[in-house]
Image (cartoon, rainbow, N blue to C red; front, side):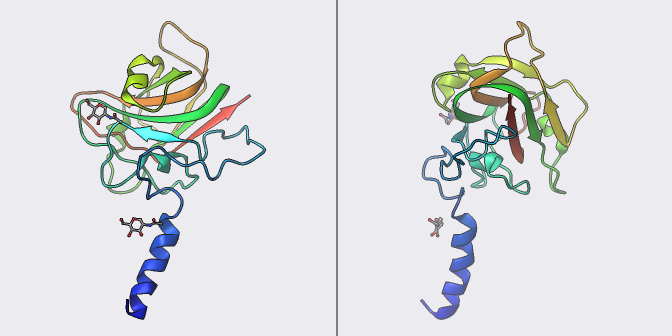
Length: 183
Ligand SMILES: *[C@@H]1O[C@H](CO)[C@@H](O)[C@H](O)[C@H]1NC(C)=O
Ligand SMILES: *[C@@H]1O[C@H](CO)[C@@H](O)[C@H](O)[C@H]1NC(C)=O
């Protein structure tokens, strides 16, 4: 390679070294701190999505970078999932909606949050999840969720967290970050 080709590749490798080049879209384990931060137990945990578009993987929602987002295809249902690796009681789930100029912030409207304590971030576990919270708010840039609102009301805690979007007209699912605070 000529010298200038290295100049082009090096920053690219640096930028994509953490979360981008996953062969399977199942997140990263590299950045789990020894002492867990109860303010956010989701950071760096394994993630997945139903379908991936624009090479925007699911791990972007737990990478601590509030400028990146993941993206599913525009199909009848979409889900994003994080595996917290063990059960936690939650005090708050915070979702950062896309806020860049190219988005329609209301695409996330009517999203739901579901829980499951075994399985993995796949369609089977998604289908078996129990649904805790359904968005019925005005569109927010940041959603602060502190309990379940779907009946039957279930405990606000889980190992797996799914976010699903299933609405007409069909929109893709994408958001920038999820923060999971625990007691
Ligand atoms: C990431 O993928 C791109 C495109 O396939 C490749 O050029 C690059 O070398 C990969 N980076 C790493 C860190 O594996
Ligand atoms: C989940 O199911 C949908 C619809 O059948 C399919 O398009 C998608 O690839 C599946 N995703 C995963 C991660 O298995």
